[in-house]
Amino acid sequence: MAQPIAQTSPSAAKALVTAVTVSDVSPTETRLLVIFNQPAPPISIIANNGETAIVAFTGSALAPTVVAPAGRHGALLAMAFAQSDSILTLTLRGAGPLRVTTMPLSGSVVAVSVVGAAEIRPPEAPLPAAPHVDLQPGSVFEVVPLIYADVSEIVGLLTTGPGVKPNDSFSPQEPAFGSAGMSGAYGGGGIPTSALTGVGGFTGAGA
Image (cartoon, rainbow, N blue to C red; front, side, top):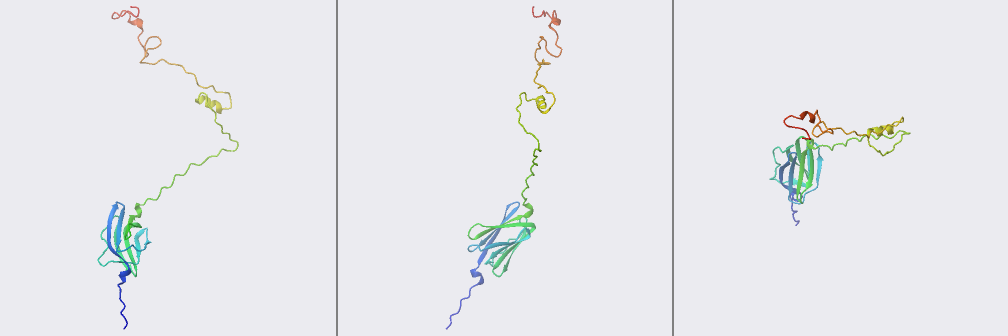
């Protein structure tokens, strides 16, 4: 007598999604954790950078008691699972373009990161470099050490006419106030000592 062939459930050989959690890890990023009952299956992103992103899990299925989390999270408006033969898809809908990436966290847990594409700033282009000016044919470039390091000496080096003497002279000037001048009076129209003779008993330096 022929022995009956045991029938197995189609989901017996598939990786079942047993839980899905969602959290906002930052003001611009939402993260889903998709947990399987066995090592995670192959994953591919078949739609991205649009208002609808789709993640496919090959050889997997959704456990009967699991539903997709509801409500809005950051740029993510809604999500839904769908089964097509042996492929389980997760569809993510956003208020604008979404950027989706996946990363395995352990053998049976996969993280799905969702970021609004509008929040992703493109790298800034470097500023254009200043154009390089080459010397014209016949130009001469020379480094000349200066003795006095003043403008008159530089002018004398650049001119082809008579030499220009360097402005290296210095004439000391008496201060206008705050210290005695060379004549013994303070600057700013000081009163001569002779004018004070006989005033209030003041007889001058020889008194």
